[in-house]
Amino acid sequence: MITTTVAFSAERPKRVKAETPSVPTPPPINILSIIPAQAEPGARVMMFGSGFGDRISAFLGSTEVPARTVDGKQAEFIIPQQLEPGLYALYLQRADGVVGRAYNFTVLPLRPVLISLTPEKIGSCNQGREREVSAQGRNFSERSQLFFDGAVIPSNLVSPETLVFSVPNVPGGIHQVMVKNSLDNSSVPLALSIETRPEINQIAVGNEYVNYYELNITGKNFNQNSSIYVDGMQIGGRGGQDIAERERLIYVDCTRLVYQRHPYSPVNKDFRVQIVNQGGEGSQVVNVTAP
Image (cartoon, rainbow, N blue to C red; front, side, top):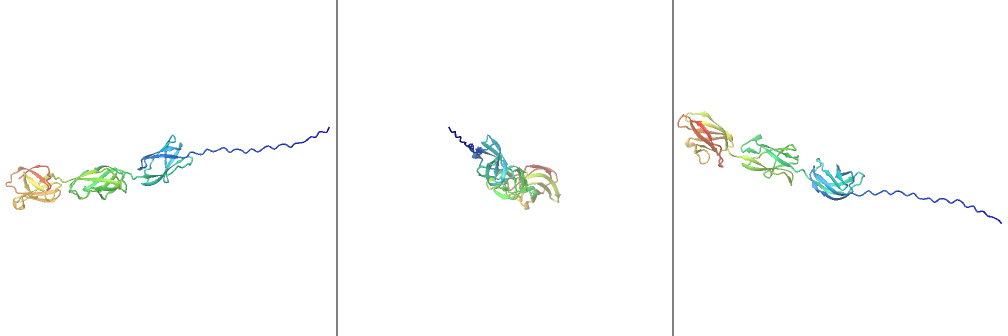
């Protein structure tokens, strides 16, 4: 019996392709709402959605703004103070480099805030620097315009908190002052009072002549048609005694009047003096002792 032995070659092992571990796709950034859709520098902006992660930055155009996230669903940031007004592309960028969709966002001009005027009233006859008024507030800039009774007048920017202007020559009464940083971005208006009521500060005997002497009256808000009332008798102004009746009131300027008085005796006596302007506004009554 013949035995045949057959030799089998060893089987080659099959090559098994190594599996590449799958890399999870990072979740996208989804924004559902932006509150508010426009705001001034310094305002807080909140964004709601998903995929914000733990660390994220907001971009307004090319300006990166640090943002704070809450549960990956809420992000908030503060608009930088130095950002110029205008339309910006607003988007979020996560720490892993994922960038969300861009949205239009408007940065508004800072709204000016007008707090006070110093002084808040001036005399109608004030001149030069006496007519200067300082407007105090905040958010003033080189673009700010000062409006007086609805019209733009020149003003000087001293600081973001102060504007200085000169009150124009306008009638007495209450006038309105307002600051605007753009056409529809204005402060609350404040009132400025221009006083026309005459006021007597001092009455003193002046030059003396043969049959009359002068009383020098100093004060403010006198005008060329002012009258003087001496114990109720009107002298000067419309309806007062004229020069032919000797008693005379001379207008020097809005702070000084001269009353030429013709006494019937050199003995001192007491009498009452009041200055009344053409519009009917009268000063306080002053007691005088003179001839």
